[in-house]
Amino acid sequence: MSQAETSSSRLLPWFGFLFMCLGMFMAILDIQIVATSLPAIQQALDMTPDQMIWVQTAYLTAEIVAIPLTGYLTAKLGMRWLFVIGVSIFTLASAGCGASDSFEALIGWRIVQGFAGGTLIPAVFSAVFLLFPARSQGLATTIAGVAAVFAPTVGPIVGGWITETYSWHWLFRINIVPGVLAAIGATLTLRGEASNARCARSIDVLALVLLAAGLTALQIGLKDAPTLGWLSPQIAALLSGFAVCAIWFVRRTWHSASPLVELRCFADRNFAVGCGLSFILGAGLFGSTYLMPFFLGLVREHNALRIGEIMLVTGIAQLLAAPVAVYLEQRVGARALSLFGFVLFAAGLLASTDQTADTDFAEMLWPQIMRGVATMFCLLPPTRIALGYLATEKVADGSGLFNLMRNLGGAIGLALIDTTIFSRAATYGADIAARLQAGSVETAVKIGIPRDAFLEQIGTPPDEFTEELVRPLVERQALVDAINDAWLLIGLLTVLAVFLVFLIRRAPAKGAPAQANVK
Image (cartoon, rainbow, N blue to C red):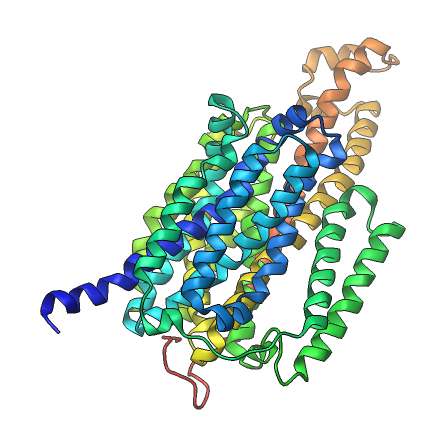
């Protein structure tokens, strides 16, 4: 083989991997890019408010069902054709979403789009360990990590700009050209043995039904719990259904000779800890990218484009931190880097717990930078910790489970955030009103009532006009305080990850491939 041919054979996997990352980037971007434009979609398709949430829920539910199936699909199709088929279906479904003229058509295409997109995410992280030697895995993980965490950050600004400049249809149509490019590119470049390896593997249909039913019930239950109440009959039924399906699924899969998902990956302590860290990162990452537009939109009343501009700081910090992270990963142990990452991420979350109604870009700058830098250290080393010790035949299953944990963490984190905000806002509102009635000047000034005007009103029952002026100020301050509680919630949850890091095993298990640098 000539030197040119040797160089080409070494570069082809990298080109193929970049095409895979492009497909994954579009799949993750599609979640956030739609969020800021839901009101425009609702108005265009004449949807009711309770229907609007299904534009996101349909996608997320289908995605979360698809992620654990990646191991089985990889075994049957090979990594190359799984990705090519997945990104092709995702592209076709994106075109269908863009052409939809009714609620039912849009939701149908979103389900197809979400399921196809769900197979792309773990396929990319599997490729890190299947395509590259240990010395190159740090760089490959960094590239995948940047794509995975940068997409949710730029989503709001991209979505706001597209909707304001063109129309909501282009939120989906922009996937077509990159999708076609990724499919063709991966077909031509992923030609190696690792990319096309297959093995005989049957499918447990009952386990698949239990998995789909359980995860769907959990996702819908978590989405509706903040509005319907955690103890409502509908939510209780959904969460009970999830519990029954989960127990049955685990029992059946654990004892199966041909399991749908390889749950025995959790027998490896480092994999289990890595999944725990992925779960907590999901709660913090999805939670922070939800709380910022929530605050900036409802409290500061910024439009979608301005919200995206402010949130772009996190993405820039992630990009700048990426090369530093990959450099250090080759020289510093994964455990030490994970510890640094989660300590910094927790600090960045807790730094947002003292926001006021006047907080804006300047006050959000450093917490965003801290979280952006920390994210790369919370994603790259735990990925190596979780997947770097697994045997080659278990990597695809492990990657699916690892990425599923991040999505589950995000779903549960968002539900807890919504519950915190809506329950605490009512409590804070009543408390602020009581303090105003008691004549608290400090409270009045804090919510924006001029000191002299409030002093003049003390002892005088407020008239209807005064109540109408004060009510929005009370509601705004109550919302700010409740949002701060939500920041505290995910901050404290992230602190738990710091303690989890100390459970990481320093040396590989006996007989496991020594692919990871854990110290």
